[in-house]
Image 1 (spheres, rainbow over the protein chains, first blue to last red):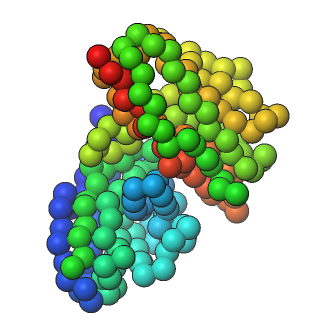
Image 2: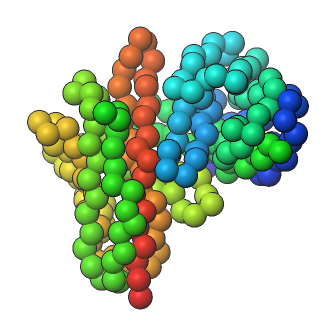
Length: 110
Length: 112
């Protein structure tokens, strides 16, 4: 069974804090993704990576950065959290045919 | 125009009913198509791929219409457990990688 884990299910941070969201997959997938999901807007791609140390911007990269130092781990960084980054964050890894999602991190920025 | 569009619903249907959702996509070069299911407060999971000739998995039938650029999902004999949000997914090879675009989802509520 493919497993994608995320470091926290719920997180509360203050405006201006630096926030790290960690994602780990155990299936040796090359492709990994970070999305945010908001009501009415669906899943929006923030960044993705198709190899170690490689990263590509998705549709809404502003205010975020990522790190992929090891194949199994893909980190999302909010350099200076803002209230409009309050959201559900979903990590995924994929084969060509299927994306496997982690359980999500609900981040609240106050 | 959005890359992938779905009617958000909700579709409220009685148990045993047949229900169909459509999803339209804007890029005619799109290559692969999928339906994902997302239960409340859970992560999305793959329901089924959509093949050009159409495909069936039990009570679920998926169709692709390339000429009109839409995919559909038909659920027969709806069960209470089918209540979920159904996400349409379209992929496109772009610049050496695969671009994956999710629709915003269609919410289905099956009523006893």
